[in-house]
Length: 620
Image 1 (tube, rainbow, N blue to C red):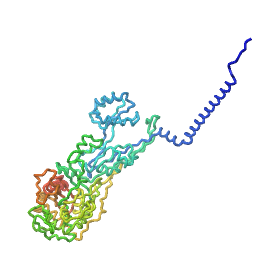
Image 2 (image 1 turned 180 degrees about the vertical axis):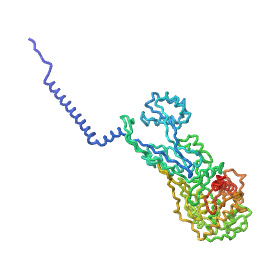
Image 3 (image 1 turned 30 degrees about the vertical axis):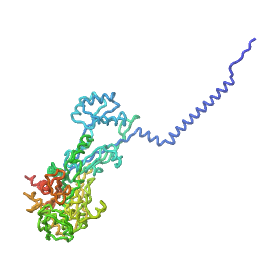
Image 4 (image 1 turned 90 degrees about the vertical axis):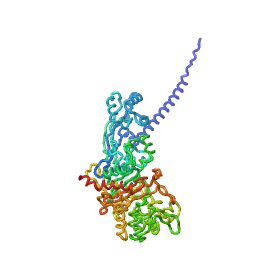
């Protein structure tokens, strides 16, 4: 009889199964609770946040950059415009072999290393379906070559866009300025929301000073997109507001004449209308082509401009600071008359040098043989240094400095350009603050003839000359004539700034004394600018100036032929005309040009003729 033993423990298996089922059930419940909790958190607690993100995935706001305003001269000649230009773009998503495509394109058009580097940098930051620029400026030949071979390059397109262009090239570039790509520093100071989609900004000149007017207001497009972010259709569009058109006071014909008069020289010319402050010509020579900077200048070209010893990028008319030389003598003489230091007919004997009381040092006159007995008119006509030495010693630096200050020396004129230099108007206080030293009588002597610490810009010299022409009325220089809003036909003019208090003399007849001397410096037989008086058909008041680049020893004579060009004196000349009804005031400086009467004055004569005789020449 056999005995059957069961190997299966059903009770134990039941207990194990039940325990595992309970654990599994608890895990499932926990997971369900976690899922429900997460769904509640996403759909209830953070509903608004994710609803907004979802909407943004479906609807995207795309900025529409405005069209930049144009710049014209006073007669409507276009100085800065927007021209269609063409660039080459690639959509990576549509290109099967990107490297092969780039190689093949390089066989058709010129692609340098900077183009390829920029392309790969931009490609990594954008989505595959977005266009990436490969080359920003295509020539007509390149456009034609790409059109012929277009079938070979799917995903490669030529796109048109508006690019800033300066049709006159180098003309008036230091006044107009130029635009360039927005850099990191500029991003910190601009309203980024208004520059969304904009790549360029004013860098210098009028382009920068009136950036807010020229730029305009950005527009917006609400675009429906798919899950990948690709635009499907435009839902709503707010058009951009174009920038204002700017009209400058510049007369481009006069600008050309002034630039031609200074051709081959290094220097500056500023011409303005005394009664309104309107700048008619603004020349800094040498110059450069602003179009080179618009879409990024070639590094070799930029280095060449920077290394040029004549510094074409430097705005001499605005920022150049020069010893004004004898061009300030009319103002010093006026100060002496007003302070009762000397009368207009009193004479000072010039023997070719001047010595301070109790000293042996000789302060030389430019005429070593002297001018003899000299009154105020003679001193201006012949530019007698000794007359000014003696008068300045009696006048004193304090009276001289305080009288010259309202003529805008030692401070910016306020012209509507950024970066204007202020020059230096020497005084006891200035020297104490700048150098921590006291003032000496010898410094008063040399400052009376525009040397020493004196520094002035061509813009300041033109303005001070305009003040003399206006007989004390001060109207600061400006370049903005008016502007025209988008869609408007009428230009809104800008009123001159008449807020500056005039220079009021105790004896207004002193203006006549000074202007008479300035007129005779041109028409007088011994005038320092007499060479420009030939066939003169209008009245002119002017003053020559020659400023030293280096100091001479006590008995050393200036010998231009023995010196390098960069050690020659600067040549200066200031003038206004006609005297009875001034229409133009001009300041000229020719760096290392030599004599003001022989070099700078003839340049000014060409400018005056070009402006005042234009109607006569046109009639002929």
